[in-house]
Length: 389
View 1 (cartoon, rainbow, N blue to C red):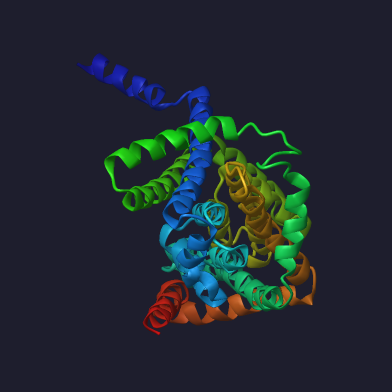
View 2 (cartoon, helix red, strand yellow):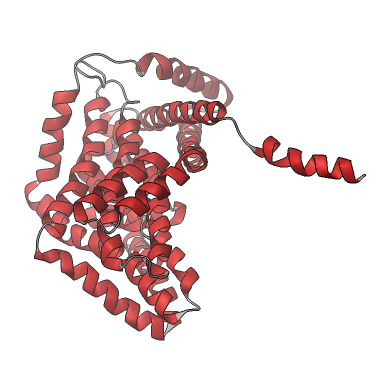
């Protein structure tokens, strides 16, 4: 009995280990599934709208930029993944969502994604000093992204600079009728036939409009599932390496912090994971919130890789627009770092975060109230009011 029990104990760890090959095959499969699902969302919206005019009517709700911003905040806060929301936005743009309506949604997704590390900081709430450091390190990300919106959304509404710059860059990368590097496309042959079969199968089971809606919902569900699974697989494979990069780079200066934040986020495919790794380090006193600050900005940049990848799934007339909105996400985050962190403005998010942390460490209910109001209360109330008008 003893020997058999010992053998089970010895065998358990080895049987629970997953081969690296299996992990990376899984990553490849779910990457393909992202491409397929984004194409599915776009095809579904094209199908249900019946063309450009129908798409304009379908997306009339998003013509208000502030409504689009709030949709981005609320959707990302609910699913806790800006990668998922921006990938869905890429699919919506492929299906006819106007690019000028999609830009505020992307900005909102940047705000919504900060909820995860703010929630992580609440884990330090029992120790006043730990909580103060952790909450400050978490909310500096919130205030930075709020400042970005306050600066760039009005400028975008007045001048359309993100739309114009991204359109120019997308035009350099897209050739012919599909997303490619000057007409070389390898995504279309592996996704279009599957999407076509899916559309055909759904049309034989459901009425046309209902089938299109099912196709959209199926695509969104596939995006959510595939990004979640990729995150889990990459965490299993890369978090140890990511932690080493994090420890080696934080505290060595802002450029090192931003670069390492971007690299770690690409490795684990989740800005929420990246920032959540850093917040406990601030709470424990290993690093100061000022050291964590540039690292979280790098996470903003690194998370744009998912939307860029998703945009390669789109073919046809929507290819340029899909790449364009993905490039908007990248340009927006790069400009935020350059304009805010690259100027005396960089002190504002840090000071606001420290003041809020001082108040929250004295009254813990304020921290919970802050999370609810910023990420759910205000967006939800605005959406409700706009729907009744």
